[in-house]
Length: 216
Image: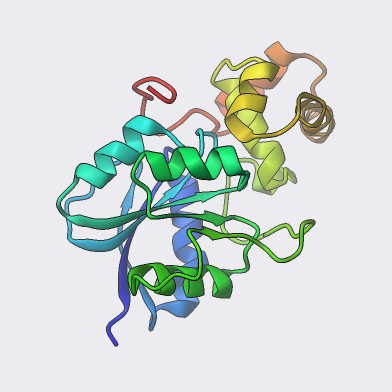
């Protein structure tokens, strides 16, 4: 069977390239056909994998554009949040499935193969371990010791979101958001939000493409 042709989509170049690197060892099963920070896919692909780093898992404009693209057969959302509201929103916007970022690379590939074959065991592919944390791929601030979640929260702070907005976008509780902010500040050596924003601007936390409106 030919490898699945996949396009990787996210606002951050480092994220899509990190995901491509993660999938490289499975090149006999998944062929990364395109990397995009614009959301545009100009080649025929079986799956557009939308990484929701620092974006809502059910970004309506992005998903609808990908679904409407005749070069894309299916759209899959790749996100931390796999709650029922997040899944429902993603599917309602046209995604074929939602896959958890907590899955190891091999299980991610398994999920993509099931979705491509139109015989998925579910429209949601979540980790069997609630506390599992994937360390694969790449993200802004990794070299500074930031975890994926801390980096995502910092990226949203850099984009000007409030704590309540961050909680809404990520599916985290407001207390969890505050905890990630505290640990993030300690790692990067700042004490105020203004300092964190300035640090983020100078360390690659500004998206590589402008947003047309969050969730619009």
